[in-house]
Figure (cartoon, rainbow, N blue to C red):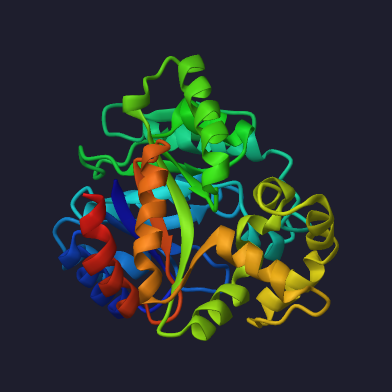
Length: 341
């Protein structure tokens, strides 16, 4: 199983150093989160693109509703050119950026044209080439006379960010791969069944399609440090939706999480580990089931869990890193990656 890392947005120079460190250990790819207030995720990779040989690179996730597909194509294929055909991207329906732009009211609300927009965006990206002019007319997007004569023959990898059946169906229909987000082992069997069914409907084999899953990594020197970081980022773990948490919380606990969503959201916005009115025992269940959180002494258990994900059908795994990524890359590279190859 290929192991990737997802980094917080940072300077291009720091991306180069972190990416080269990851490449030295044999990670398959390095991604960066697309955050509305951050540096441009394509430009951040340019020094790494020029100073690396094997590792793949790209942003997760870009929505066609924040950046038109033709502009995504220009930036993605420019990155792909710079890194010699090692570019990759996750196309998603849109999260925080769309909220900031006033294009949807909240994280639980989907853009009304989300499925069609993502399908059309990926279709357009897959059609980019130098053989003929690209003319496309979709329900949401259109493009006329597009023929970049510099894109080259090695196409970037196009993922769709998805976890639920309808978007999984879009991914299976048009993309090279899918990146799930925070999907637990208890939900993997049903998720893989949806993917297999969608691939069959699209006339594709499982061998033609890769499945990855994003999980956050909070492994620190002490349990207190680890849980503090995990709690500060907890709200974005599947947005704490019922589908994610109902396999390990009872009905009363699920209802409490739902009623306290504004509390979890406020803590995330303030980068705070505190959730007034939410019992610590409940928060511990969320952390323990939705993240890899602990100390280096817990790594063997996380390796066993990753192997279980692999047995459930995953081809790749994307580890989301936060503070002190160098330490995490070294720990993963020395103790986790060798156990998965």
